[in-house]
Length: 191
Image (cartoon, rainbow, N blue to C red):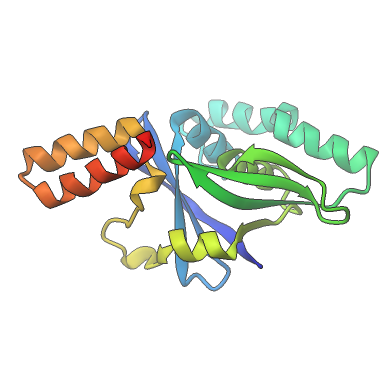
């Protein structure tokens, strides 16, 4: 069973380093946060019309989208085949979500990073985005929309480097319980 998702937005957690891609179910009851790097944030911003820069730079960026790989591949696939694609987020490992790019007619699937899959759904709004229900239940948190004062993020969605930084901050703040949880996650990844 799969849950259909939609993109709510992107928020910065460490400017020019990492951001969070916020996905919700269609009813906007729960959310999934995916850590993305600055390059992916830029790609998402272009496709959401949120490019930062002056009017000329913004216009050039938007015009260049027709020559970008996701848009070009999507157009070529539509022209050459009758494949009906979808992206399904299927797993998480070492802080990275993974997905499958699937032909809904044949079930043929190709692995892809979840963030790249989401980018493809931006390039072609006819490609739906899903997540496996069991992963959704394990990883999603309550969605508060504009009422949120921060965000909830499962530890297994952070990279090792981010976990080490967070553990040091917990130690500096004398939050030893939080540091212990992070230490356990780091040890689990080593095993």
